[in-house]
Length: 318
Image (cartoon, rainbow, N blue to C red; front, top):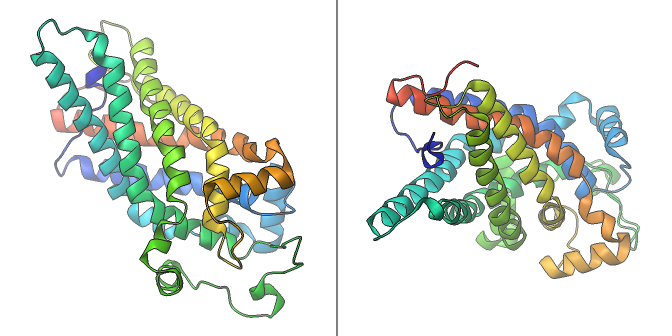
């Protein structure tokens, strides 16, 4: 099977329900662990993963794990369609360009995948930064925050007032009013440093794992191959992205109660000085575990879409 054909951007009404449903499922399944990951990275006094889960459940019930989910859920179809579409169309353009070159060889495949993944990463940052910002602000506004130097506690909890944000729309309005439109892109630099290499370690392992698992005689990958390759790719990508994910989470959570960081370098410097190198690996296990089912669902959605549009059986039963 040609690795360049593993991912193809598809259009048409047949593919939309599958992509939307599996995209929504990936958000719903992954969001509780995303909340735990965010609290571990940007919160205080949560301890390890199990302690964080217990704390969130005890103080906020099961609904605490789903805070901030509505905005990612509403935007996941557009986000994933754009990212997968840019990746596959860029890859197709590069492949066609190589085919027109004299003496072209398949050796350009890896470089094509790398460049297409980087472009997809840039697009994901442009679309995803505001979504992640709103999600993290809503996730963090009720966590038991305490600034060690100032001895502050959350205003909402201390004064018995409602939460800072009443929902995603109010959160957007508040940020735009207090920080301007540029405030919606807080953490952009950190997310760029996370997602550009992160998507390289997302798409490339998927394509090569799929090729490796799928026998040459098969017309397309099996459901098991897609699920396994997509899941492993997601775990690799999210696991390796954790250090910059910590920085991004801290920058975007900054501002719910007070502002501590001036930028990416300042966040890295303050975090390292106060908590050491290990702080940049907070939530790495949660990231990897969460990345597997989310990515498996998304790649299954796109492979099913490809099958539906072509009207064939490119994705086969194992």
